[in-house]
Image (cartoon, rainbow, N blue to C red; front, side, top):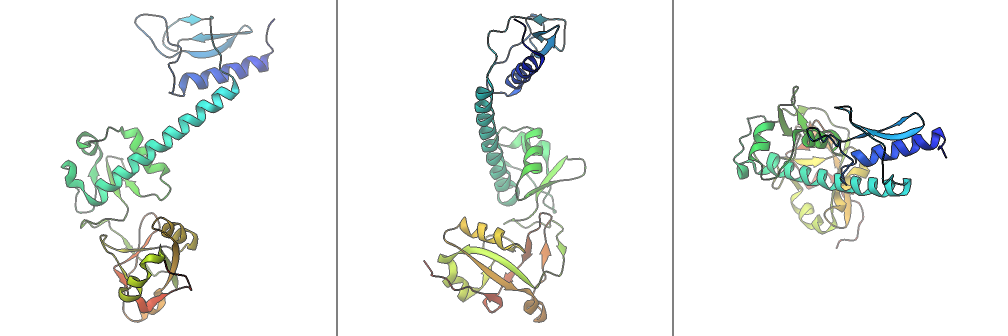
Length: 263
């Protein structure tokens, strides 16, 4: 019995997803000098596998994955992909923000590293394509390429002295800084300090600040009265490529502390 066209097309699409999802060994060309991954096609009412590089054709297909199996495979692949991206992002943050000397990497005065040198010296195997994907998809846009993608740098967050060519701007009247309630005593006493970074980090988005605070414990969001700071001659304020507001320090008198139970 010949399957209807829609069913054949669905089976073809599932099989091609299986061939390219990278989790399992795909059907490959039977020619000894080729071995390319085969592509599923519908030909004359029949599902066949063909080689994109030669005239090899295979009609015997012992397994066509179900939609449920492919969804399971896709979830596994996506989880592995996300974990890999996070691992690379954390590694790039450590090297480009804090410890380039750990792998013998030299950043220029503006924080740029040569991508090929980063890869060759890295203790973590990664490809240019993986780095491009991390730069493109990172939720906080932590990294940037130069125009031809031959160099990469962190947009902000450095503990080493580099000039990432920050743009000095007049900030909104109020900015937000997320922290944990356990830090409030020190902040009341000393204000916001850059600590092991070059700048204090702030945002104009309350929800982002709250999320940041949650990474350090019980979150609390402090408001920064930038208007009063500028009136008193403090600042300047900068905005990084990924939208983070930066300044050297914020004395506690310019902070608005919400009522909170400290812990």
